Image (cartoon, rainbow, N blue to C red):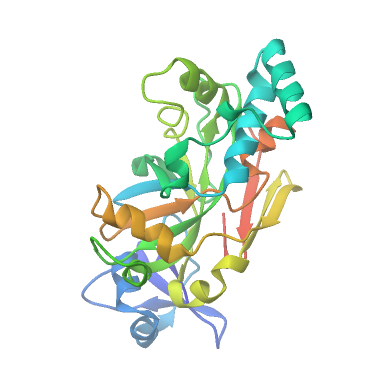
Length: 298
């Protein structure tokens, strides 16, 4: 089932009539709370015909961005070296790969990447809605995008099993991680806290529609995505991903206590997204569209 907010009021999509209907629940207008109640309960609350959702479906309590696909991480590193590295560094990387048929060890994820799922904390206060203009940050000249699937947590859990982690998932949405690649490159080499702090916290985007977990989980590993820039397809792909329950288990057992309204983002949904800017540059005024078979777009 698809949910969202229309003028601040929750709405759900009536698949039989192909119309959006207002969700009349006197207890809450909070989409994550409704997701936690389950699609059958929400369906029983559908009322009069409403308007399609606009804006953010909710204001997340936090935003955790995961990097789970090794090829994504290596491809991003290669793209960064190609775009920003010195001539000697580019030559070294190319020669090493030609001779060994492998990338430089420094361009591979570090040891803990292979021990348990890795994530960074994004800026949930920087989320912008579908159709809004992204303010171009003054500290960057090279902006990039990353198509992601957002996992909306609708129940608080801790020290959970994979099955308990899945039970805490209320729905899915499309998220875009705007990234200042030149700032990321500089902070990776010279910064104190790595390359994801300033480069990835000035803006993120979230689709107006959230799709309930029961529609997505059975086909989660078959999801695909496509990115269009000014109407032109820049990247698309379908990826076999790790089991979602195992991914969720790690942050729910280690160091953190995820709670309702949190968004977990898996940032490897489109294979070229991390390096798309190295083939063609975004410019002010560019219009980008992200679409996923999760039945949501941005």
